[in-house]
Image 1 (cartoon, helix red, strand yellow):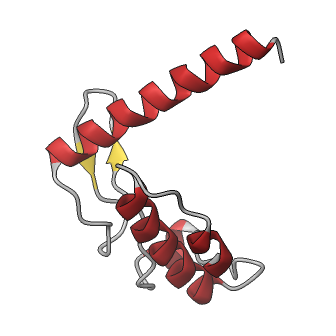
Image 2 (cartoon, rainbow, N blue to C red):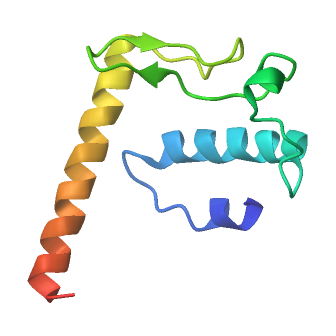
Length: 99
């Protein structure tokens, strides 16, 4: 995960990606290689693992754990829109390459 940070291409998503990589490293340190059952419902509230909020069907968000990755509703909506655009671009690229 540390090596991935060196491969981040500067651009509009670079800071967000670095932040997510940092959170991912911290979560990995807590979970270990095999997960140690940290993500079970019984254990989620006993750890300081950071997870993004859940987006419900009506568009509202709700935290999964007390240490939810901080984000505003506007930032979450923007992130979802960006993901959709990226997925559309990937689909178009795959169709263009006939993969």
